Amino acid sequence: MVEPIRTRVLWPPRIYVRLAWTWCRALSQYPASLVLLTVFVSLGALSEMAAVVIVFGHAGELAGFGVAEGLLVYGLSATAFGCADMLMGSVERLGQHIRTGAFDTMLTRPVPPLVLLATDQFTPRRLGRIIPSAAVLVLALVWCDVDWTPARVLMLPVLLVSSVVICCAVWTASSCVQFLVTNARAAANSLTYGGQALTEYPLAVYGREVVRSATFVFPLAFVSWQPALFLLGRPDPTGLPDALRLAPPLVALLLCAVAALCWRSGLRRYRSTGS
Image 1 (cartoon, rainbow, N blue to C red):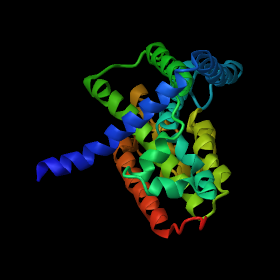
Image 2 (cartoon, rainbow, N blue to C red; image 1 turned 180 degrees about the vertical axis):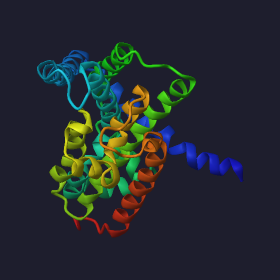
Image 3 (cartoon, one colour; image 1 turned 90 degrees about the horizontal axis):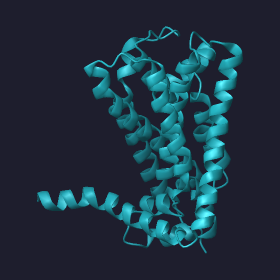
Image 4 (cartoon, rainbow, N blue to C red; image 1 turned 90 degrees about the vertical axis):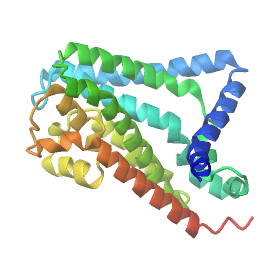
């Protein structure tokens, strides 16, 4: 009894890795193109980082955060969204697959359709965004002179994983809108890529309504803002409870449940293209 349960749990991640590796092997047949695309993606990530540095360089401080703390927030956000884009970013093409009938084909295969959708056109070039962002995060952690108590050392990987899971769940749940409106990809992107742009800066620079919406409605504050406050040991300048900085793991689990509910509900409502 234990073995079938273990197989059902481990099989989707295992097949995900195999399918992703198949796409990587296909792309490796054109190494020059892959390297150039990766470099261009890295340049885009570095330009975003440069924008953060320029903004903080001119302002000096934003909401009491200097350039080092600003880069910490940026590094947390960019790393989490970069990993989520690599792992689940392909689900944003759900509407395209529905219109072309390709999603019907996915439903007939002996593999979970979400795994097939997430690994479709999987590309390692997105590492060009993750690696620079992670490097900025490491440098910011050193530059900020974080007081590395045992609690912070233990919580750092938990916060990073929780941030990635939150972003993956947001990507999946927002893409499910395309089950109802197949041309709603831009609306979904406003929450994913728009959410990344929002969380790359300390949330205290925005209005109180934006902060509360990003905390209790679309909980993107738990991607970078609350983890940064925990690592820096600073009180929340927006006046929200300090206990929220320990909530990212719980928020990640809650959003995973919401994303799973949206996905299952979308599958139940799906009636094929008729083609």
